[in-house]
Image (cartoon, rainbow, N blue to C red; front, side):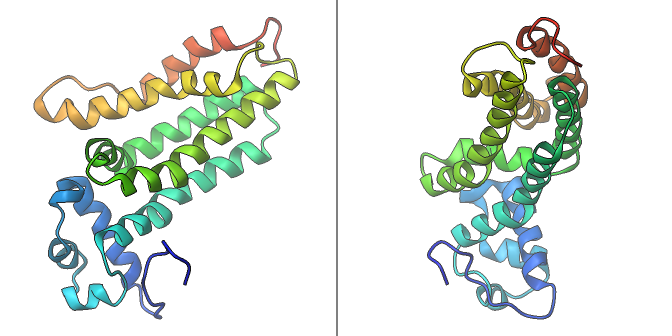
Amino acid sequence: MKTGEPKWRRRSDARPGEIIAAALAVFAEKGFAGARLDDIAAQAGVSKGALYLYFETKHDLFRAVVREAVAPNLDMVEGLVGQSTLPFEALVRLLFARLGEILTETRLGAVAKMVIGESRNFPELARVWHDDVISRGLAVVTGAITAAQARGEVRPGDPRLYAFSLMGPVLMGVIWREVFTPIGAPGPDLKALLTQHADTVLFGLLAPEAPS
């Protein structure tokens, strides 16, 4: 077994998946420091001893949550971008529509907030999140922008910085929803935010006469 791999033994039943789903729910609700393995075991409907058959530590569980519950969304995005023949504008709108669904229908935003809030005390969280989520997502968007520049669809400029500009408001919307909406602040409609942001950012990114 490679170092850093989740330490669970393969069995024919669905318990590893159920434990990962339970860990995602508990991390989202209580954060990393506040989550107890007893809570995760109870949520999954297994004993703490049974949990240890699959995962030795909370860090192992967090790696599994990222790789089994979060990374498949990135697999979908990478496939969508890699196989798409759409013009850049249409691709961005399609990507944002899918992102809006993911962020609205999953607990990904709560996990992102947990990583941001607890990474100083648990730097391994930030490392896993960066390597398996952020760097992959940023590479996909940067690659799409680079390809669009080569086709003459996007203005000259650093494609990685353009990717930050494109994705920054997404993170802001997620953080607002996870931090301020629970205390009563009016939260943004993430799908509407992404639609409006696409209109705004594409106005600055697209080269004159770019195909749409």
